[in-house]
Length: 357
Image (cartoon, rainbow, N blue to C red):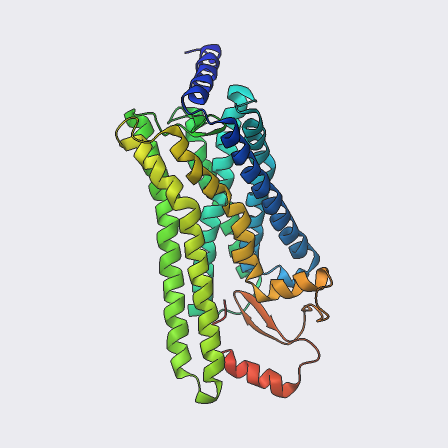
């Protein structure tokens, strides 16, 4: 098949998909509003996160390099993907042709998988930090940079095949977004969808559940061992860790699992069992990850929150300064501000037997 024939077939498929899964004018407008909100909140949240990371060098720790990678990939989704689907929803049809559709499908898959893999690597890094406290040195930064590079290579390894013949990218749902062609039922397409679900969604999820589950068990064990004097503080920390773990795993499940399940149902279920509109909600949920990730993974970081409040003059507290007294681990430093007394520092060191996330 020539490139011209492929282009004509994909253009016809775009028109057919739009006709079959056509939304009402109100439906398209509603989707456009939702995408607009996701774009604004996702862009601002990730841009501000990167701005804070760039301004405060104390935040540039090994683990935070993965957070920076997540924010960058989510920002790329907002820049290169969401505006195209927003414009398509406003007009009620795909606007940028077959090449634009393939680019949209590829880029969104690439940046999305980078984010998913980085989230799982982040959980493993935190797991390693809690169970094996390692002094901060250049090797930790080297490992973090390697993890960032690996997330992009891994994502490319799974998103390039549809451009090379193993499955393909094309319109999905109502014809205003593009992705992997879930509805194709050839052995090649089904094998790709199965591998994508296992290696890019299920395995990262299992790694996150294992690592954060182990972290929670360690925190609970250490909480029972601290002196009764510090029991209340220990319980508060345990509650904070539990909130973090539940938020991270729940956010991952809510954003990505529905999309993966619908993709499997479309690929392996009875033809026509799911109308095109049914895939729209999971696709929108997946895009909300660009909004939730900065909140869950960045704003719940106490050190980042302190720098964020200082940057926007929301707090009179001075930001952490590199070189202050610290309890170092592979996560970075637990820093004391200059106005903390030696007694308070000693008390904080007693509490430091509790793993910090």
